[in-house]
Length: 83
Image (tube, rainbow, N blue to C red):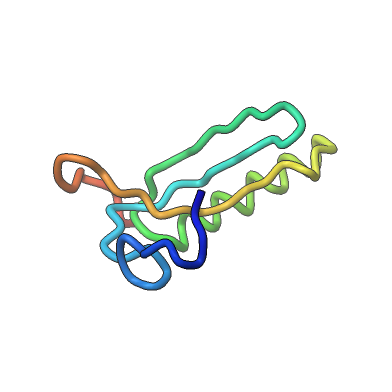
C-alpha cells in the first residue's frame, strides 16, 4: 500500500517520462478492470476517456470509474502514435 511517505518513482506527479497514456476503466460492482491505449499524448487519452464515460452513462452504469494513467513501457520506448 502506498502512503504519503512512499517515495515517488518519477517526479511529484509520478508522470515524468511517460511512454504514453492509458485509459483505465474499473467496475467496482463486478471488480472487472480494463485499459485502452496507449495514446501518444494525454489530451487524446482524456478525450477517449470522456467518450467512454458517455457510453457508460447511456448504459446506465454511472458508477464505473474511468481514469487516465501514464504508461511506462518496458524494454525501451515503443512507436506510439502522437496525433
